[in-house]
Length: 114
Length: 220
Image (cartoon, rainbow over all chains, first blue to last red; front, top):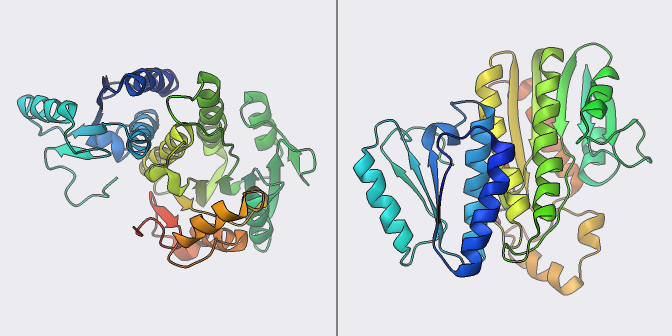
């Protein structure tokens, strides 16, 4: 299951959607990947987007704590789309990795690390 | 100097209100009618407006403390359990803070009660998401409201309260054993940290989360 939150700002609608999708995947034992942006994790594009991104990050870590193969990819404006696809595919494979946030691009350097 | 504290009838919220009362006129808010203040359901827009209407003058401190739990593993969690926690812990806090923006004094401070669970916690997908959302809100509003208002959060771990006192003794002992400081937090200690974040003494701190967990978030 891939849930792409990168262009969502309707957090009140997106959160229940993400819950339902993650729950369905967890019940089926499928890998779960949330797609976020580094700017939203830092609150740079407004509160609704920041709320959604950070809520999903915390939810993803909880899924991992419950034994599910859940991870997240956070993209920056400098991320190559091909690189993003590469990391999504790796995390969908999910071998030995759970609860991880992979940042594609380097704009997180020098910032708070969510 | 007026401070608003939600969820102030008991536990951490009551301790926060008591501590802030040393420096502020404190408006205590709770859905519990026993609160010595405004009885309000923070999930209702009209109640949020009543809270702000009850503030005399400018608002110097807003503490978003009201919260609930509805724990279950993700595979068992109902949509109602998910929504209830998001509505109280996250949406209500964001909407109250947004509504309060025109009322904030220069140098005002917002402190929201996140939780160590925002780092991820078994059986709490809804709660962790709500607290992570509060962290996101904190970062975004810290940027949006600067330089007039500072916005921070605190993420407590196990805190001595009615809820923890009701836990089975063996469960509690096991949880305490995982805390390097070897004990739960006292509500007064969390309140002191919040008072510090609300104080001009920490006037250069904004957009941050203070994890008050006795070292638990580092321990194996």
